[in-house]
Amino acid sequence: MTPRPKARVLLVDDRQENLLAMKAVLEGVADELVLASSGVEALRHLLDHDFAAVLLDVVMPGMDGFETATLIHQRERSRHTPIIFLTAIGTTRDEVARGYQAGCVDYLLKPFVPGILRSKVEVFVELFRLRADLQDRLEREAELNAALAQKNETLMRSEAEQRRLGAALQARNDELQAMSRQLWHAAKLAAVGELAASLAHEINNPLATVSLRVEMLLAKEPAGTPTSHALRVVAQEVERMSRLVMSLLQFSRQAPPELTEVELRGEVAATLELVQHHLRKVGIHVTQEIEPGLPPLRADRQKLRQVFLNLLTNAADATPRDGRITVRIRGRADGSAHIVEIEDTGCGIPPEALPRVTEAFFTTKPEGKGTGLGLSICRRILREHGGTLEITSEVGRGTRVTLILPVVAQPAADESTTTTAEGAVAP
Amino acid sequence: MTVRMLIVDDEPELLEVMGEVLAELGHEVITVPTASRALEVLAHTPIDVLIADVVMPGIDGPTLVRQARVCSPSTAAVLVSGQVTEAADEAERAGAFFLAKPFKVSALVEVLERALARRHLPTRDG
Image (tube, rainbow over all chains, first blue to last red; front, side, top):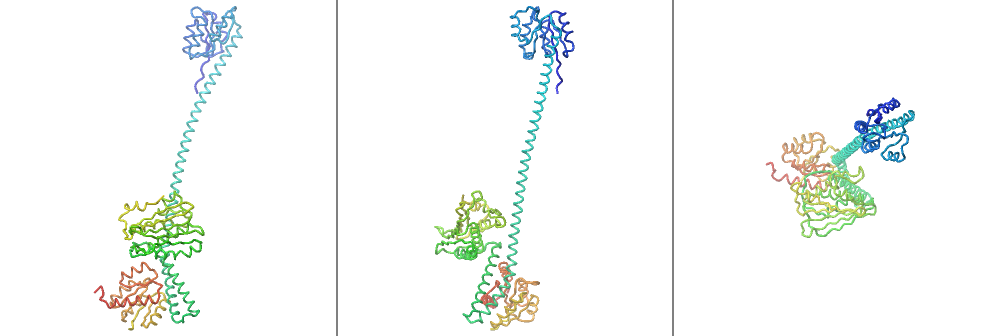
């Protein structure tokens, strides 16, 4: 807070006795009374100080009151300093008008009544003090405002920082959650593999016993009897269970590719057989459009079955009741590859998710339903065969997965050479 | 020709039915529940074909086949298992034929014929 400025009053008169008289009357009214005996001296004082009021004698030798007043008000610092003219009785109207023009605010007639002089000056001193207070308050307010603005800015900055940190934290958290989900899925998949292996052992042993027992009984039973029929049904069902365990094992197994002569038609049929019960149950129709007379190709039978099983399962998961899955197999015109298309009339994949669907652990299926590994395993298997996997999809219309399998498998030499091929996810 | 067979499986039901099936086919069959018992038999009795389960407590099938080849080189070996994929590789490494459980009688007969045919060829180990 700035110290309160002194309320000074400047008394200007060429006559010493007048100055002393005024000084006596005004004693105690202001903080300080400054006396000047000429206009020039008055101006000099005005250079040094601000004044609450100037009492200015009009008639002075040299620079008179009007002139002095004009000069006072020309200066920026004293532009608004109140001037009270002191004039003798008999001042003309013209002179009064001139005085007001020169910037005086009041008139006092000489000889003056002490009480009037005192109270007039008191008013100006009070005004000066009020203005000073106001000025001070405004300055303080401005200071406070500036401080407030600064605080505000700091606050806003820290708030933004906090938001940024919060967002970063959230992102980390999401990442962590995704990772733990992935780990859980991976663990689950590994568990499925182990489970499949021990299940195979535990189920296949009793199945072997049942199968042999049934066969022995059948051999002794004449054909056509009800018992013989019943035994045949048991044999059939045992075979079905055995196939199921076998597929589960194949599905969960990871091994280097074993290339043999493979007929795609037969492999697709075998895989369809595995899922057809499920497809029938959920009311999905399957159409096969297979080019006749396609030669076999060299591929890993089990792995191709795994690919088909994955793609058919995906298609089934995406397709509503009464939907359709179409499987097409045709040869490439130059005979270098076979093209397999698996198309569904399902919900489709949103464009933003499409480029990521072959990433490991990425899934659009509900929590717990997909591992996010299916398509990435498919892509890996296709890569092992030197082939490609492309996906086109339209939300609400369906999805088509196109596999290109070279007739002679050329396993990719390394990752980098296959990135373009496997990255061929059509928009 | 009567063929003498030794069947080893820790599953008593399966062991029993396999014994019955092969006996009905006219073979002479010895069944034992463990590999160590099988080795005892092999030490005293000439066996044409050894049929062993892959996964067994104690000595497993492939180990039994390897030991059998030492103590009874003329015995052919067939390994059977419900754990299809890995077991098949193991059987091959042990120099045995492989049969996946469950199997048909015809499949068993076929693999036994192949095993016996191999037995009359000169062995790889010389």
